Image 1 (tube, rainbow, N blue to C red):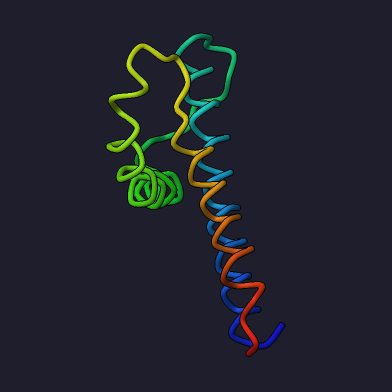
Image 2 (tube, rainbow, N blue to C red):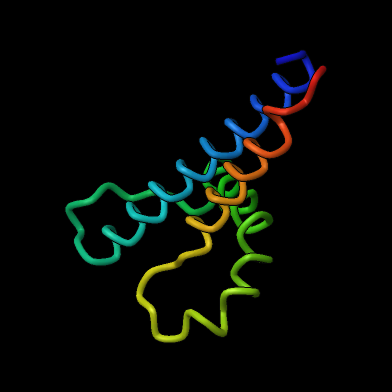
Length: 99
């Protein structure tokens, strides 16, 4: 792979890592709402605000498309769809770049 493909691959890895951090954060916040033994995470924390804003920017369009199909489902499938789209993009575009 060339330098452009490496840069795109690194950017996709960072996006995946930030989405994973958002997932963990949302689970901790959910556990905190169910039990007081879980540590408190301040929603005004700049890191928390950045992760939520970043995830909202990426996940909201997918959530709008999936909304009619997800009625009544207890799990948010938008993150899974985004991960699949990232991998498809990586395999069809990034890994085939000659430069």
